[in-house]
Length: 134
Image 1 (cartoon, one colour):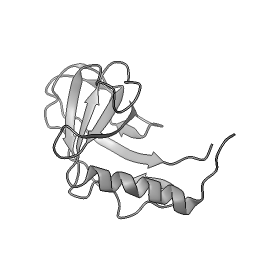
Image 2 (cartoon, one colour):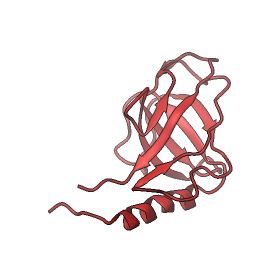
Image 3 (cartoon, helix red, strand yellow):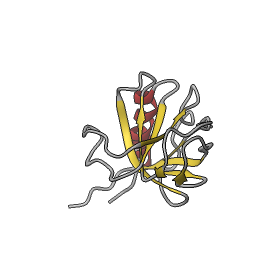
Image 4 (tube, one colour):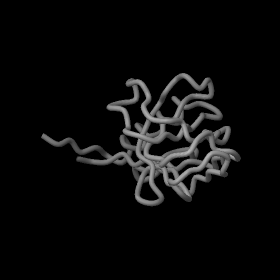
């Protein structure tokens, strides 16, 4: 049976992500297949790494949506490849919090371009997480 959550509960679930990330989270962008879950070993090649604002997300989720604050560009991409997924870590760079898909539109994490070349600037155009109702 599919569950339905109140907007208040969905917002609280999303706000827990903000708490888990803490300050200045690290967003790593990879090529290849996305792992089965955030606890699984990362797959693909690390293409870029961006550092989140000291407050990674807005003060509170609204309407079941959590929106990231500004995220610094990666001024020099690590490798060449096609961005397909990301993993967000605490500032320690080892504690994984969430992962998801990357695109130029329609994904949680959208880039200006998913075709990345070593040394290029990588810019995030939007990063929002929506807590859905099944």
